[in-house]
Length: 241
Image (cartoon, rainbow, N blue to C red):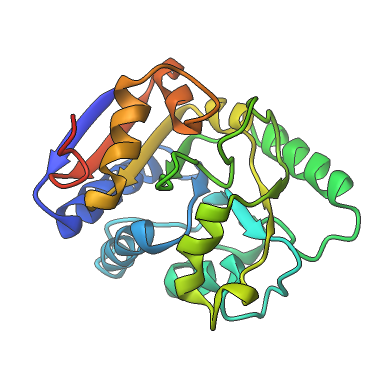
């Protein structure tokens, strides 16, 4: 596990974008696992800048998103589909047929999750997975639990997660209570993992993930067992290390 501590969010975003761009340059048909939310949005802006300067080409890249709210139409302004289109995909030359995202409107969730897993495996697995971390230590929407859920599955969202995400909605009543998420095994099967975190509100989760015991109560702690993890955090998120 490599930990890179930077001064601020902007530097975190730039370092992460350069790592993703290097991955794509070295392997143009890379399979990328992508995250959503406030944390990676700066990285996506930096990737768009690199693309506009012709320093990276996404023509052959395939992507799989970590998660999506269940029961939220893709065209809803708060769906992760909309987030990805607005924050990255509409601004680069990725082929729409190479974009894969969980279907929050899937009628048969178990069948969808099985097909999602199968497609990841068919493409040889995820080459580089980008992660954020929740204040409760979750990665993707794998919430603190008594066990590690292995593969893509339907999740009941933790109250802390619902409250944290309520800032994106009119009120907490509008926040979905379920989501489809890649499982821990799917994430851990990625060849490389980048985890991003910034701010004092992530410091405790980072400390427990990096220095604590491996425990489903802190899902990110499982990353200690992966052989190629890079954690890029600002000084505030690193303050308890």
